[in-house]
Every structure is written in C-alpha cells, then in structure tokens.
Image 1: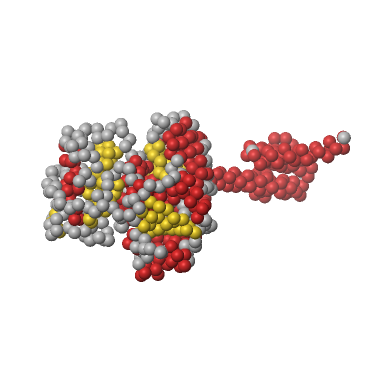
Image 2: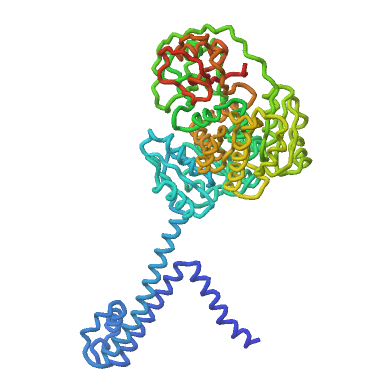
Length: 633
C-alpha cells in the first residue's frame, strides 16, 4: 500500500498542477514568480561558489541585486572581471533567459486569450436606441439590408446580432456580403451567446434597445419555434425589467402565436408567421401583377406603410376628408389610441380625434403631411362586375402550411372550383396530412397526384383540362437544401414553358416560390408569371414590423380573406369610356365604393405606379387600379 501511495503521489501532484495551469491565469503568474525566485537563488549560489572573493559576495543583498541584474538583463554582465565572476554571470544569465522566455510566453498567451475572447464574445454592448437581432439564419443578412434602408435618416444607427453561432462565422458572412461592418449609416455589431441567457441579453443592452427581432437560431420547424418561444420567455419574464423595445418574433407555425400570447398577456409581441407567404401567394395567383405590388410595399425601396400622427388641421374632421387632404401620401387607414388593431379603409364618416394616427402609403417616414383640399369627382359609372366563376388551380409541391393555403383558396374561390396538388407524396398520405387539418372544404374539390415534377410526362398527365392558375411552392418533402429546392422549381418552370403552347397552362397567372434571393435572377429567364422570394419577403416584413409593430396586424388582414385585402380591378369600374380623370378623382370614386385606391397602371400587365406623385393632372385611364377593399366586386 505504501508503494502504491508513493506511485500515486506524483500523478496526483501533476493532476492538480494541470488543473491550475489550465483554469487559472493567477496560477500561471505565480509559477512565473517562483521560477524568477529560483533563478535569483541560482545566481546568488553561483556567485558564492565561483566568485567567493568578489566584492558582491561580501553582502547578501548585494549578491541578490547582482543576480537580479543578470537575470533581467544579460548585458549587465559585460563589466564583470575575473574568471569565477564571469562564469557565475554566464550561468545566471542563461537561467535568466529561461525566465524571460517564460515571461514572454505568459504575456503572449494572456493577450491572445483576451483577444480571442473579445473576438468570440466581445465586451458588453454600450448602445441605446439600437435594434437587437436574436438569432442568425439565412434571412438575417436581408433583414440587415432592410433595416439599413429604414435607418437612412438616422445619423448613427446600430444593429446588434446575438447568436449561439461562432462570432467569427457571422462576422465573415457580414464582411463577405457587405464588405464592411456597416451598411450606409448603420453599424453592425456581433456578439456570441445564448438568446435564452438573461446575462447575454443584458450584455447586448436589450433593455435600452428600440426594437428586438427574435429569429430562428438554427434548426427547422418545431425546434426553431421552441427556441423563439424560450427567448421571448426570458425577455418578458427573466430580466430585471421588461424591455421597452418593440418585440417582433418569426415563427414557422402560426399556432405558436397562442403560446407566445400566453407568456405575458399584458405584453404586445408582433409575430410574423411564415404562413404569411402562403396567403400572399394565394392572393397573387388570383390577380396577376399583385406579387410585384406586395414586393414593393414590403420593401423600404419605393413606397411603404407608415403610421403618422394626425395633423392638427384634421382634428374633428372625417376620414373621407383625410383621403383627399394630401398630395404626397395616400391615407389607407386609422389607428385609435390604446387600440392595437388598425382600421383599414374605414367609412368616410369616421370622426378623427387628436390622438389618432393615420396609416399612410408614403415614400419614407419623414414625408411632411401638408394638409390641403383637393377636389375629386366621385361619380361612378354604371358598371356591374361579373360574378366570380369557378376556377381550376394547380399546386406543385408540398410544404407544411399547404393545409392553410387550401383553406385560403376555399374561402376566396367560387363554389365548384378544383385544385390539383402534384407532389412526390403518395396520394393517400398527402390527403391525410392536408384534409386531416382542414376538414371538409366547402367550395373546392382537391385531387392529389403523385409524380416527379421535373419530368414532362408528369405535367402532361395532370393536364387533362387547362388550368386557370398555377402555384409552385418549394417542396420541402424532397431532400436537399434551398438551392436544390429552387433547382427543381426552375426545371418545372422550364417544362411549363415548353408546354404552354398547348394551352394547358395560364402563364400570366403563375406564381413560383423562390427560397434563395440569388436564384430569382436566374428564374426570370423563364419569363413566366410572378416570383415570390420567400426568405426575402419574410425579412422585409420583419424589418417593417420592428419599426412599427401595428403593421403586423395590417399585413395579416391584407393577406387573409377576413377584412380588407389588396385587389387589382379594371378601370371600367371607376372610369367611363374615353373619360379623363386625375388620381384624386380615382381616389374619390374608390371611396364611393368603400375602397382605398393606392396605385394604377396604363394597361393590364404593366407595372403599377403606387402613390403617384402627380395626383391632380387628368388623363385617359383604361388600365387597372390597385385598391384596398373588402371584396373583389
């Protein structure tokens, strides 16, 4: 036993030594001090051994001072005389060089560790009024671009990203995309940490931020939503105080909205669900050209929605008066003080109060609202829109929110409509997944067909009769990343291009989902229909809602069949044949129908001019009108 204990003693000593060196910088420093003391002792001993008659050997403190000089500076030994003294000086200098090497190594290691820690984590953020983005995904870089556009009028804007991903990875992605740690006037700061750690959230000054955007930080579907919910739980209940910032969260599943609302019923968290894309695509296939309108309204390039305080000159007036009061914006709705919901296109007689805000379509947030009085001819032609007819729709691909898409189709389409769903899933499996969530559909009959959408024979097999519209969604049930999904979509588009001459496909009512924004330019080569860049649109919506949380409700209403929606309507509903009108005339006539006109074009299929700058000049109008309305009649 004694021998065993003796054999374990060095191992145990080495074990404790390794722990101390690995975890404690103080231990490493004390080791350096011990080595320096040993070197001094060796120098004193060498002095007494090799030069006992030297002047320095006669006094102990002088011997220590002599040894210190040789340990710290090899050059001090050049004045020594005598073989013994020189030999002692050489030995002490060699030992001193070893101590000097250890000192350099200690300092270099300490500096490197601190620099690495700053690179990976960083010092606590000292910002105020900034935007905090929790989580990092492929959409974050587009979100940064949109936030930079929104902050163009801000002198020193800042966006802080907190993610569990390595800081170096995010920094490299930002530098690769933008070439610098800033976009125009917006600085980008990156910190590595957990979005569910209260201390990490405090380190990015979340309590001083003006807005917080919670994004999926890795993972897909439910796992990503769980991380978002946990981050919101810490934000609302785990911090010393509730953040004053606007809280915006992105979730995959819209059913998580109820979970988020239950965290703190008194708090207001604007939630953006990716089902928004499904609703937007359904709206776009019903009305050609609407996808481009959505794209412009969601981007900070061009005109977008803003909430502005009511000018004093309009207090006590009616909403109808506000619609004809401005020549540089279009009034679309009304936000009452203390109410979260924005009233889209209220009745003309709705009174205006001092604490109201107007929802306007404007070029930027700082456009002055100069109140004027512009005349508008509100007399409508006696035109009756035709009743909606049953439609035949083709859906190519499968995504988890396909049931929600079919519910929107069932609500918005006329009775007797048909939907063919072409996927790689077996028909019984697809039917169980979809109808198990939707239940019986009232207006549409759904047929499920299995096949490879990148084969011509598959598309020919489903075209027994022409389709009125087609929508291509990213098929997440097939293996591959976003690039692979987009590649399959492109191949399907090319096949449709080859089959369109036969009349089976209505290519002016075709909407394709492109997941990667970089693929959009390649997709436009097909010259078929509209393209919805899913990740890009989600980032744009997150940026808008982070600036004004009430816009989440506005966009939810605009993309569902409940309440007001965006519609493309023919000029014949508003203008008599050969009649010349101004845009103020069109606004007045749209108000007579309970609508808000926000743009027009010169002919069907052309790009819409939203919020026209010249609203007073009259011209012949025979194109189409984009309106916010409650029905498509």
